[in-house]
Amino acid sequence: MATKIRLMRMGKIRTPFYRIVVTDSRKARNGLSIEEIGRYVPGQEPSIIEVNSERALYWLGVGAQASEAVEAILKVTGDWQKFKGLPGTEGTLRVAAPKPHKSVAYEAAVKSAMDEPKEGATTLKKKAQEKLAAKANPVSEVAPVVEASEPEAVEAVEAVEAVETVVETPAAEASAAEAPAEAAAE
Image 1 (tube, rainbow, N blue to C red):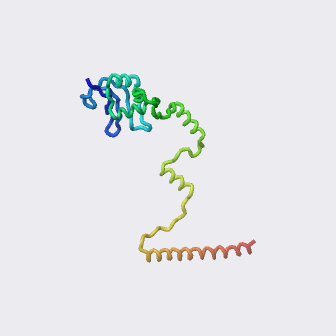
Image 2: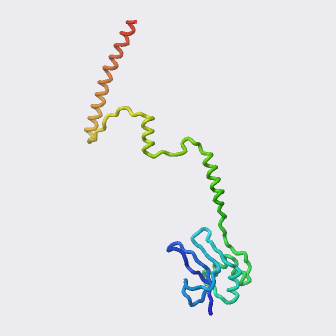
Image 3: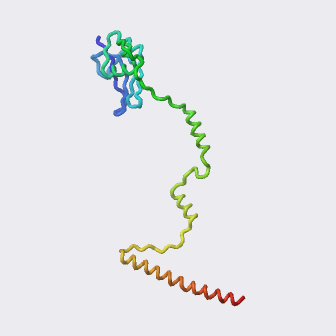
């Protein structure tokens, strides 16, 4: 029986991962395999490559042929160099940094939350912010805005300014007249 060491595709449509399997060369790619000797996940950085070196060397020793992809993977792990007796048996496999344990990450998050000021730590909803701003800054009476074309808008603004000057003038004169009368009464 002619055996091959090749990849068996698994996973979703756009997120594949592969099993490194030993199988009969006449079987389909994802058909029945003799033995699974590793796995390869190319979708992560760095790619995850796990190979049972002892079993890979055994199957290569008994005559199993590695596919091009599996040969490249075995060169990265250093198993191909061991089999052929070449230098560089340590391989060039990159390993991802170990992730911190969940409890360590939780404790760090709690500590950083304790360091934050308690005032203003939460945000209000948009409507609540608007109500709070309205209470803090009461708005004085504003003249209604009239939507009109340019010349009409200019005339409306001039009319409002004229009314304001007329209203301010008598009030100023009345207050000026009251001040000397109060001074004379005392």
